[in-house]
Length: 95
Image (cartoon, rainbow, N blue to C red; front, top):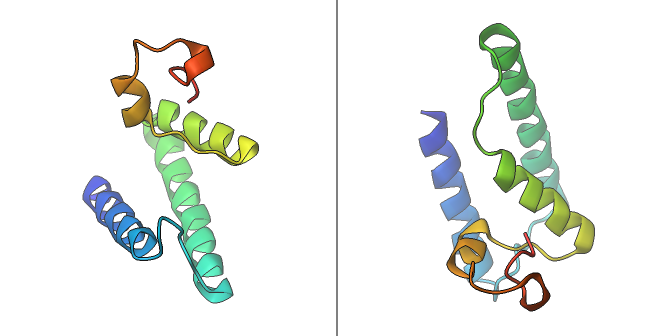
């Protein structure tokens, strides 16, 4: 299933980053492969959605990634959920 494949991919990328003190060190070729295949996945999902309707999951995660990339700081939604008691000033609503 796609969900399992994505989970396994994320786990592999996390292991790679953890081995490099939290940095995902990829060669130019690996970066191109990752981004190209991510774009192809988006194209395939787009075809599926045009036929079956939009997939109504993952939107908050993608929005958090977009904001994190724009600001240079990615905040995990899981971390955000654990810190709901914090105000926006102390990072509770950073994602």
